[in-house]
Image (tube, rainbow, N blue to C red):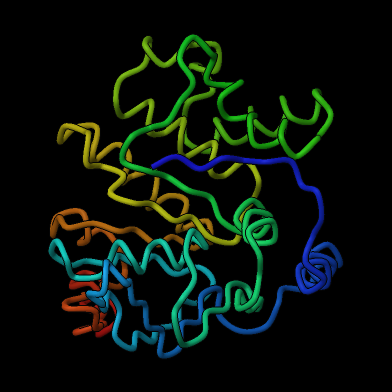
Amino acid sequence: MSLAWPSRRREPAAGRRTAGAQRAGRRPRGPVIDVRDVRKSYDLGGIVVRALRGVSLQIEQGEYVAIMGPSGSGKSTLMHILGCLDTPTAGSYRINGLDVAGLDEDDLSDLRNRYIGFVFQSFNLIPRTSALANVALPLQYAGLPKAERAQRAKTALAMVGLSDRAGHIPSELSGGQQQRVALARALVTNPALILADEPTGNLDSSSTHEVLDVFAHLNHQGRTIVLITHEEEVAAHARRVIRVRDGHVVSDSLAPATAEATSR
């Protein structure tokens, strides 16, 4: 799945108020993610498929959460809603205090660009384009000056440990390095949320650990991370695990290592 980054034509009024509070140094009150009784149905030629059946969850600033579930469980539908790539049939979803209900496609696109950094299983890097230019791309679409784009892209690459690879094109990078470039691209807009959909699915075990170490480091710095995965070993790196089955949240608990540390 790829996400277009259109230039901003306009901004939702609620988004302007929220952004203004952030610029003034005040974070919006409440959780980063607030999902309440969300339902999602699809009409497939007269057959109604209920992908989500009343999902409620909250994710606070600075949490590291894995969402797990087998194929057909509803986790991909939930990811689409959390990423503002789709909207609920019923229920409410607020991201960073902003209710997505009633937003049109332009507003949803702006909200994605402003609040969410996406990392996908496929790296979605532009071939024959340097890591620095790939990372700076969202800022180019946002209309930032060239010098500022370059500086922010360099900072994002440094955050994922790739300062020395800024001039390399994707074919000159390992799979793990390419995913770290994609992660830097997600970070460059300073989003409220990093949403990662099976980010290690195309990686070998060594590169998987490399990328998960970066996620852990970013979370220790206070970044909010939601990771969609079907792999238990990957989910174990998160601090909290939410399991989805048949459109319901069937469990929501601290990851074993986190629970052990909390009990001490």
